[in-house]
Length: 185
Image (cartoon, rainbow, N blue to C red; front, top):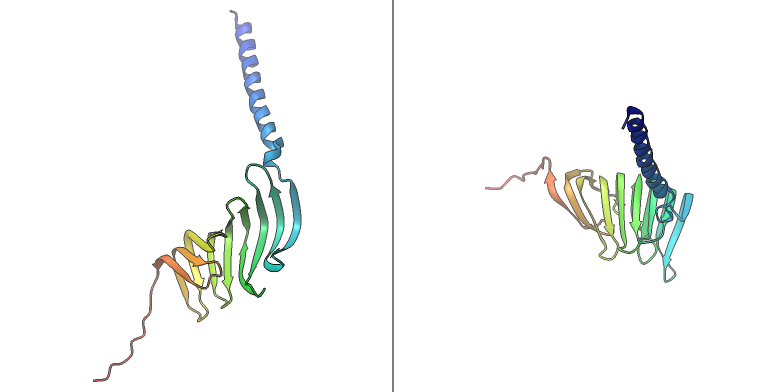
C-alpha cells in the first residue's frame, strides 16, 4: 500500500464514521417521540373534575408530549393554582420550569420554586415534587419557609400535604431563639 491509498482509506473511514454520527443526530432531532405534539405560548388552562375546578395552570410555554410516557413540560416560568372542594384557592406553586408525568401523576418543579399556602406562608427551594395520588409534596433540596408570624425556618428537605398546611423539615438548620418566662419562687 502506498501513502496515497492509506490517506484515501483514512479519509473514507472518517467520512463514514462522521455520517453515522450525523444520522444519529438527525434521528434524535426528527424523532416524533421526542418532539412535542402541541406547544402553547402564554398558556392558561383551568382543569375541572366532575364539574369542579381543581387547579389552574398558567405557563409562558407549555409543550405536550405523547408516546411511551405522556407529559407536559412548562418552561419560561409557570404557576399552578390548586383549589379546594369549594373552589377556593388552596395553594399556589410558582417555578421557572416544570414537568407533569401523566402515567404516574407526578409534577416536578425546578428553578426558583415558591409554594404558598392559605396562611400566606411561603416555601422557597430549587426543586419540588408533587405526587397527586398520595397528595404529598416533598423535596430533598435546601428549603426556606417564611411563616405567617414573620419567622423563617431553614433546612434540608421537606415533606408536606398537598395544600402545604402541614409540613415537616427533614433536617432543620439555623438558630432557634427560646423566650424564657421568669419563674416564681
